[in-house]
Image 1 (tube, rainbow, N blue to C red):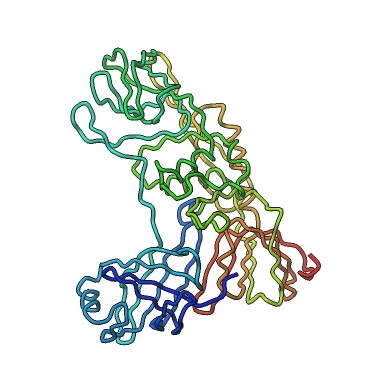
Image 2 (cartoon, one colour):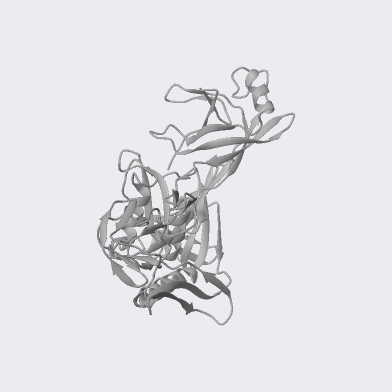
Length: 443
């Protein structure tokens, strides 16, 4: 639990200004001016599939153009109004922390006589593994990207008479085909494959290098991906990630976190990026298996609960996906579509996810993943609001609580966290197992 004051650092023209909703001198000797008239509400929740990030919130500052201590006082106010699309870096903390908790940029949204309203856009990650390359005719084209084994990949980019862009980054375990016949690979680098001879047939590539879900998220965290301080994923809450095979074929230019969000969703996982308080506050990617139930849990005392709600939800009719299989038949590449659906109920919503597979043999593992997703979607959703800003809570944490007024007990896994700085509270929401009420102290 964090106890303390709201601290918002805003950087304007290279100078830092510290503001809060009340004036105070922090223990680190930084004075905070009480210019915040309306504190923000910020939520850590899924934003793209299994990718959870802080969602946009808003904060209002008193409009003090003549106050030199204000982040937007004096000439800074003139610049703000003259250039309304300018972004300003911020750091949002609660109390004095040994690290920057929520970071991003502020953008002016509204100007009124009494206040200035800004939207907070938390830190985004725009890096993408999908780049461009010049083909043999000198055209700039999108360079496909693959991770894990692929069978008969047919989106090869020819860059020279006998050279092709390497979509896999691997230099061994590769087999190149022209019109279904294997050709000798003279050399391979992480960017280029050179074959002995090539005519004008259909080029395809097979990569036999097996990869796992954990290795993919290590890639996401590492220097070739987001380049986080810790270059491997933290998988305590995803204990089976190292045994789940993955095959990614990416043709469209998208941010890596969006690709990873789709992958996480397909494998019934979530991931988020935060400071690891057990590892010197290093920036870390945390991977969470939604099917994982931690042995340890936090009990929320009934008399501390501000509010709670429970939603059984509209039933899920089924979970479905499809993927392509490429085969060499009569010297041609022939594609077949594999469709898989796990049925749940005769009526309800239909959930569609991606599949990272490319052979007939992958059907069983894909069906198992769909069943895992179904089992989570069938659970009820519980929300509980507790006092203070609980920065020590994390997605994937387990909570138990009961409410006599609702005649229910909940055993819940956190999937989102909402921080309300206006009334200093935290709302935890997640899938839950509900049972008839028993006093929390008896759990």
